[in-house]
Image 1 (cartoon, protein in one colour):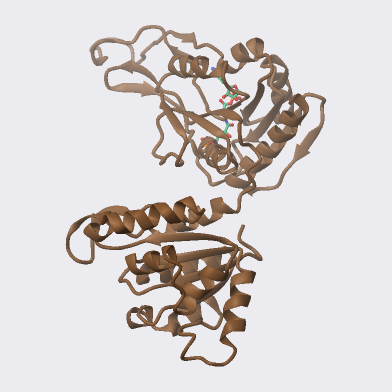
Image 2 (cartoon, protein in one colour):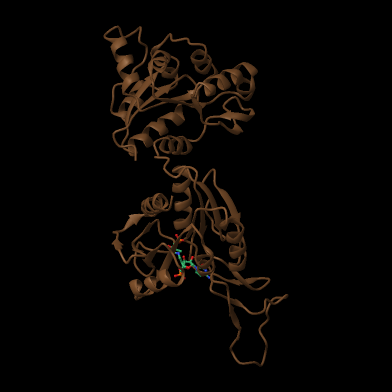
Length: 402
Ligand code: PMT
């Protein structure tokens, strides 16, 4: 994802430097070229050798202590930057940059760059909320500088409040989002994910093995690509992606109602969920008890749930609808039948009996079948990659349908 990207990390003097060490390590794992500039105060917290070892590049510190070819260096770093991260963003460095002060290697390079500059503020709550700091942040935001909101928690000064630098994983997500092509802006995409459950009595229910991973990945990637995303999800243990509207449901009927509310205003419906086709005819008000003296059998009558995809497939006007087919045999034959019966624009077939495919895993092995009969087979891929393949096809269809 970050291969061939030049990311400059400006490290200032604050205890959160220890988290920036992790940020640099994660950036390298994403294959970015990382160049680190440290202020003199930053070196009191962590040695430049730490960043040099992790980034596999020379670390730039004080321009005045290194009178070699410093102005060439800071200009060339500024020019090669694809993205500039300042972390921890102290009140001091934010204030300097907001007021045009360029008195060290870091601030001089920030001043000279045309790349996106992102601050990850970290400071004591009172400092963070100080109107001077807030005014500097607002002013820099007006100029196009970006800020990753600090978290709330126990701070190094042993007070509790806002000002804790964002976690490395969130900083990496923010940076990755910055490089995404925003090709789905203005499109509303509704995604269903996870299983549904159907209660039998107050303590028991039926469900299936869907973890929601496939649907959540599609939601996350669609949001990153600029779409307005509504995620309709059955019960899962997953954290929903940020900036996505989440509608939680339990039963297939509740999923049907949630899709109905969204369908008229969406351009795309992607049905990655595994809704139960049947439910018990009657839900007992009380726990079903074993009956002494009766046969060792429990007979429950099941009735059909609505087929959500088929219903909205019939109603659709300009919407693109994408289905999934979870099969254990005759994959192509059954998937083609569903494609037709549910009037999907294309269907993503997965053989859930294969290792690395279908339920619960982080990967999937899919075959995509289009309305015109075209079939694309894919090898085992990370579910995020599968999500982007699906979204690429959606984007092509949106361009055709306008
Ligand atoms: O959630 P994970 O653990 O990541 O697993 C991913 C997955 C296996 C659930 C996913 O890749 C997948 O295959 N989802 C579809 C599961 C399914 O219900 O398939 P189906 O062949 O029974 O249904 C065909 C299509 O109709 C699906 O798009 C389904 O969402 C939809 N459907 C099914 C039943 C129903 N009553 N209403 C529906 O809309």
